[in-house]
Amino acid sequence: MNALKKEPVKIKELETKKRIGSFEEVIAGYMEEEALEEASRCLQCKNPVCIAGCPVEIDIKKFIYQITQKDYKGAYSTIREKNDFPSMCGRVCPAEYQCRKACVLTKKGSPFASEQAINIHFLERFVGDYGIKNSLEIPIKKDERLSKTRVAVVGSGPAGLCCAGELARQGIKVVVFESLHKTGGVLRYGIPPFRLPREILDFEINYLKRLGVEIVPNFIVGRTRTLDELFREGYSCIFLGLGAGTPSFLGVNRENLCNIYSANEFLTRVNLMSAYEFPKAHTPVNIGNNIIVIGGGNTAMDAARAAIRLQKMNGIAPNTTIFYRRTEVEMPARRLEIAHAKEEGVKFQFLVQPKGFTGNESGFVSKIECIKCQLGEPDASGRRRPVPIEGSNFETPCDVAIIAVGLQANQVLTSVTPQLKTDKYKDVVVAPDTMETSIEKVFAGGDIVGGEGTVIEAMGMAKKASRAILGLLSKK
Ligand SMILES: Cc1cc2nc3c(=O)[nH]c(=O)nc-3n(C[C@H](O)[C@H](O)[C@H](O)COP(=O)(O)OP(=O)(O)OC[C@H]3O[C@@H](n4cnc5c(N)ncnc54)[C@H](O)[C@@H]3O)c2cc1C
Ligand code: SF4
Image (cartoon, rainbow, N blue to C red; front, side):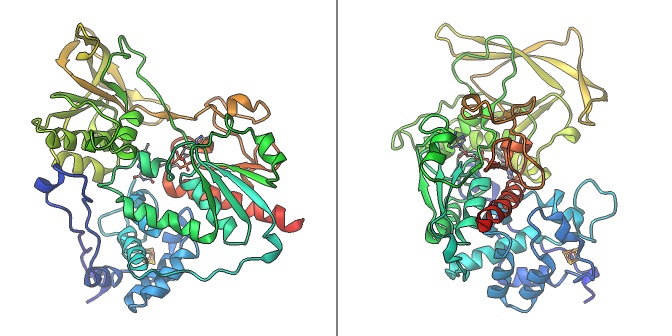
């Protein structure tokens, strides 16, 4: 059949009933026959525009062709030339705004990928998982002349991991310093296991260890050591992949009541500290009858989907609602995440803006006060501004609130390093071609540079920095 006439191969998902009682992965991934069918839809364009849509420029056309030839090992090598984490990215990349949006099968001018666009991310995941199942390793050629050179990487999120991998592959001795006790950054403490199973994350991170990368946890650069001290210890260059881990708050009355969490704290307790296994795990998380999540981004969806699962697992009738001050159209979250949240029973209340909280005599939140809004003129983001409707205030019961209204740069390091130039958002300023900061031989990438972005964008910046670092060190 003509490839253009073939229908996209739909992905299978865990039954909704089974989802909310567990943290099991929701999206099942293609079986071989499904991957072959989906790959056969690719037009093998003369000008494969999809590649420019990928921040790390995977040769998408080539790896899809290799799938059609059942050359999965070849497809794995093709992806790994550009991306060391295909199973992870195949699961979390918002492909509808990246490679799939660029695919010729997306209608011109569409704000995100058309349904017809090739499911590039599911094919990438299929190949990545094939690599894991078959323990495929990628041959590397280390440059022995670089073996005595040491580079420090600060932060083990996607930016830090990617930079570490790129440099270690060339023979450089890389040490990653991570402030938390586990590696992965948002991949581990933010994204729940029902979207990114921990075995996948562990496998892909362990690849770095096999490359010889040393990972030092519980080490806060800016506290445990300063940048100057790291240079004095013999590191030739430093890469900063600090992320944007500081939550923003609403700034409303009584926001400091107990059981009001930032989404980062809530998700960290659940994802990193396994709070859903308390008391087997040490860290608890309080779950109540009325959980309200405030925000409209992916973090809000992850928090709400985790919260409703915890209600069910704790024998509480699921009742989790997302409050958002605009309408569904303006929500920045991925459409798939919104759809999954709805399927799992999360409720949505649009055009409402929190004004404050009320607490009980023990200091725990009991109610949230909001005002209704209507949409006004577009703001700087291009989205229509929420305008409060005077006199429309209302109160509703709330015994857990989770605030997911944005993240900012963490200033632990920048506050003790005045030579490190930052912008008005406290993001680190870099030279766009090299990612070098205002301090010579200190480079940066990921969310600490651009603000909240995506995993693959963070990796794209890290790759650029690693090329510049390599250029510098090879000259020596
Ligand atoms: C809940 C949530 C869900 C998301 N879902 C998606 C998704 O589905 N798809 C997607 O593409 N993107 C998603 N994102 C965005 C994406 O995760 C980030 O853009 C990406 O993780 C940024 O990578 P990074 O390496 O710059 O920072 P991070 O992942 O934040 O990692 C930074 C690391 O640096 C460590 N660190 C910070 N300061 C120091 C210090 N001074 N010393 C030592 N270590 C330090 C931190 O502990 C952390 O481990 C999500 C974000 C959140 C919050
Ligand atoms: S643009 Fe779409 S159809 Fe063309 S090569 Fe890329 S994935 Fe295949």
